Image (cartoon, rainbow, N blue to C red):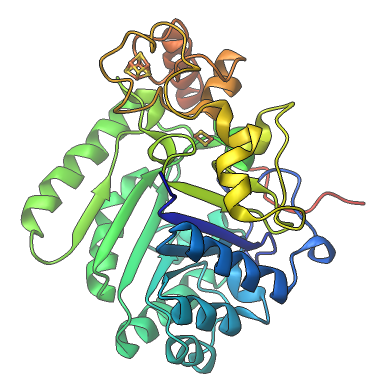
Amino acid sequence: MPPIGLLAELSHRCPLRCPYCSNPTELVRRSDELSTEEWLRVLDEASALGVVQVHLSGGEPTVRADLQEIVRKCAALGLYSNLITSGIGLSQTALAALVDRGLDHVQLSFQGATPEIADPIAGMPGAFESKRALAQRVVEIGVPLTVNAVIHRANIGEVGALIGLAVTLGAKRVEIAHAQYHGWALSNRAALMPALSEVLAAIAEVERLREDLDGTIVIDSVLPDYYARYPKACMGGWGRRSLNVTPKGDVLPCHAAESIHGMAFWNVRDRPLAEIWSRSPAFAAFRGVEWMREPCRSCDRREIDWGGCRCQALALAGDATQADPACHKSPYHAQLETIAAREATATAPAYRYRGYAAS
Ligand code: SF4
Ligand code: FES
């Protein structure tokens, strides 16, 4: 089956320092990033492989001077292009140029519903106002806007206000995305974990607003893993629907796959994307159901959630072939609940802000 979506992580550079970032803690440096020609070739190969949607992401994709060329290439290939941006540094002129070259959609992150909450999370004074200004420009120019808000301990009380903000800004869709603990988020988990009571209140608020705002805005929200009974089908199943290309060209089945030690990733500098998709050991490792052990192997949900998240299984159970501990059938599920309860009630430690390691 061919992939539908490509997450093109154009650069790990970013003006923000969000402590819940899912980028790896060892960020790719600018000098190692793929060139323009390499990205254009990746897009050609992705289109030939069957990809129809390209998510231009990072880090912050607008730091790339060749973003217009990349967007133009997507349009020329008939690929739907979604710019996933922090909203910092994208001027009116630069936005207009991207739209001119065929940009289809913008997804803009908000760290909170007010600057007082949002800017300390983003690690940048003034970030909130820049985002609000960009949202206005996106809506004025006529490109559909999705607001994305990663939810955690410091902003979970603002879920209703964040949805209200998205409506005010004219977004078509808002994603209430409870933090997933990979990369920087895993190292900040003790600072980010909300309490069960807060999670339940947030879910009730989303349900209420979904009814009230039916026809006004689409609200996407799923249960946070640490308080769930079943896991999510991470990436729609490993190696089934999408692939990620990192800033230096490694091709990953998911954004956190590099956390799985010993797994080798083939690179677009060495091999065509089609060969990587169909033959790379990393994609084959957890594709389908053959790799599963109990309780997944005999579970009737195995082709619904595909055993959940491999990276979370590794992080929490120490073995990527285990059922995702978010599943109540996992022997590690009780441990997950204990971690959540302990971290949510302890004093939150200071954030470890995202950044490059000193070299
Ligand atoms: Fe999913 Fe495995 Fe849990 Fe079944 S046992 S619900 S397949 S994670
Ligand atoms: Fe890697 Fe879920 S993030 S499988």
